[in-house]
Each structure stands twice: as structure tokens, then as C-alpha cells.
Image 1 (cartoon, rainbow, N blue to C red):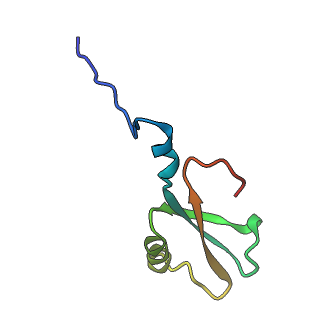
Image 2 (cartoon, helix red, strand yellow):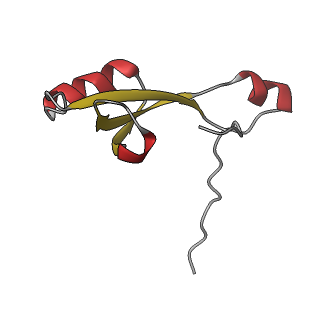
Length: 81
């Protein structure tokens, strides 16, 4: 019988350490020229805005009839996007 050690992520001594740690993620979308939410297509989630823009350039998402939107979101925060 093998024993499996528990895997813990981000254990803090108190909750103030967790509240002060705000991780940001950047979601890469391609939309139409009017940037409507209905036309958004997600192309990835990145840890920096620069990586998201580089990926959009590499995948050639910038075209004459589309726009690229990089949306910044905060992890562990309940809000409407």
C-alpha cells in the first residue's frame, strides 16, 4: 500500500497574507471591430500582458476586420467581468 502525501497550495498563517496577495491573469480575446461581448473568442490565459500580446501577434489575430482585447482579471475575487 502506498501512502500519498497531501498537496497544499498557498497555505498562510493568517488570512491577511492571502488578502494582500493578488494574482493577476490576462485573458486574450479576439472580437469584431465593435468589440462586442457576443463576438468574443478566447485564445488563452496568460500571466503577463506582454505574453498575451506576443501570442496574439504570433497567432496573427490582428486583422483588418477584427480586434484583440486583453482583459485583466484578479484571482480569488468575486466580481462580474
